[in-house]
Image (tube, rainbow over all chains, first blue to last red; front, side, top):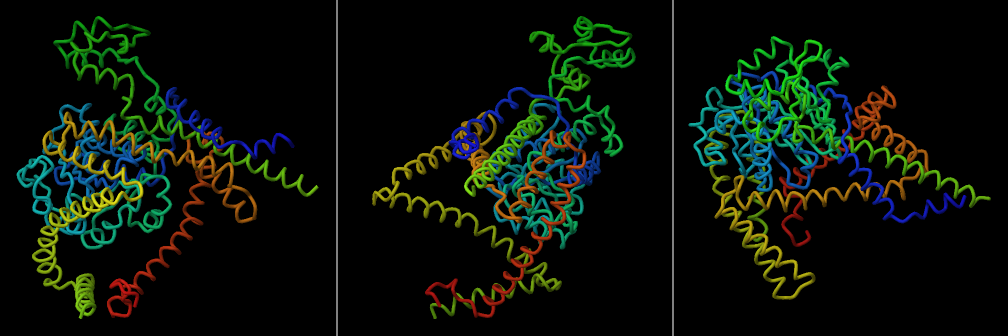
Length: 372
Length: 209
């Protein structure tokens, strides 16, 4: 009895400390876990993936949020940009809020660091901050280049190579809006009925419930909901996009995909003899250095990239190291932040449920003793 | 006269947009929208921005002059506004400049910290106030536990049925209540808009009538 009474009067500061530990410890010690994908994430992934390699298709990412909601929304933005860069999908970005403009730059820079071949104006175009949402939404239905006029770097949009084959929503047929509050409203009300634009949203978890009516009616073709949605999208990119495969629900239920989505450090790249020969032929200048780190086990050639010292990683260059890490199924930190965060969220949710149960137990025990 | 002219502007403006929404005629869809409205709305943005900056600066200046409640914080407005403006204009807004550095190292962590405080308040509220005091509160509590568990990887390990139950809660009871609220809000908005267009609702003009 005394225990429950004391628990009822527990100082808030203890709760804060426990929650802080429940979040910080899993962030510092990552472990592998699997986030089941939901249809709303899969639908969005498939729609974006269907634009792969097409000159006459593009997506628009609308950054309608500020820095406060970045922990939830930023991993989604990075995952979608990565998907587009992996699968050669044209992507446009813009923000209706001045606070969203630096987030676009930050997101593009984060992904571009790992894709040096990607060029601004060719593979992607950032329109930057553009005020007057209604005029933008309606104007792009007629002509994107004349509505946006110049991109964030001050170049005439109509002269950019990315605009080849892109005129209006007929080609740029999907918009994904990221928001910490109501998302997709203007697009659903004006662009979807008038121009047939497909609309999807990425929202914080607390706002997701508001979007379900639009999702069920088909006005939204997909939705990423909070950090979970971001983690699901990261997973789909790792399983399909980085392996140059199309989406398949059968593959998602295959237990072997667990090797592709491990978020702990994966350091051993394994090759068959033929794969290794092809790998060496791709990088003839670094052949000797690569050979230096090869090990053979049961006919399989292995290279532990984490054991290569910094001076040699520099000599091997970005592309060799990138291929080794891909072969090892190693996921770079910026591409798994949502999943690392989901681990922390797992522990935090469990702690909160324990708090709720303990609080209620204490409440009922005290109520019982008061009656007596 | 003081009220009639603004009311006429609102009524005419509202009716034009009503025609635009329901009439497919090219005068409304092409001439009005693309040749008149969009160019004019673009032209209005810079003066509106300047007006906003002047208004905000005047408000903070007055606050400092009057030594109003928490007037010291107004200095932070001027410091932040001047620093970020200069950083953007002089060094550019791209990676490598002061503007982006300030965004990455100051604005981003500070804003995210404020948002993250929510988790602590939620945990505290869950412990101190989330009680099964009535049958309705018990249903809410159970639904919250199921949805919270199903959201995270650990939950799906506890039971493979949890995600389906959680999805049902979101798709059926949540959706039904949300749709009801949205329909109510929608009907309310239409009624208020019609009252404004017909001149019945005039409280937006000020003066209390």
